Amino acid sequence: MFFKDNSTLKFALTDKDTYGKIYANYVNISENGTTLDLSLNGSALSEGDNPLTIKLFNGEDLAEAEIEGKFANLTTNSRYNFTDNGDGTYTVTSNGTTASDIVSGAGGTSSNASTAEAWDSVSAEKSSPVAAAVTEKLAELSNSTDAASQKAYVDALNFHYDIFL
Image (cartoon, rainbow, N blue to C red; front, side):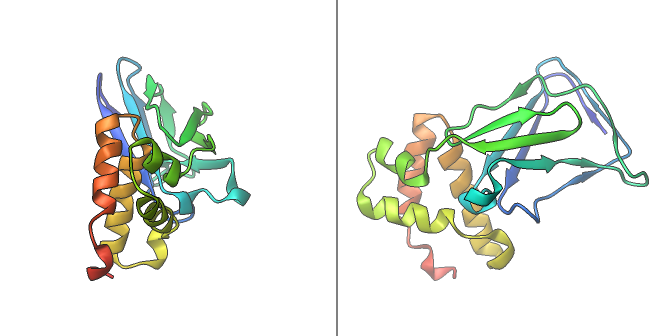
């Protein structure tokens, strides 16, 4: 598997135990403009799991994937910090910002903040596929440092998702 110059791997972690993994015996990552874009929802990183170490690349036929190179950039995240451990694993730590903090900063209401915290605690593993998809998109928006995405997060929280549950 090859990550060429200026490519991006977008990866959403919605549950600490069941997140996706990439299986390949060999992974080559260009160090020229490549980006790892990670997002999480709150249920993926509970207090007892902070910090959390995740492993994205796993061997297909081998016990471990051979990894050459590393991503030049880890995206900036409004709620979590990511560290490349240099061995194919990444450490995720909370920076203390909650879903309701993002809502407040984007001009949302207390009702939006309560809705944000409720969706942020939804485990993808224990919910319907539609609810898991909603959770993933909301996490992506709440993790963004972009003001327009954070406003879109508040707007999305105004939608009545209970019709999907």
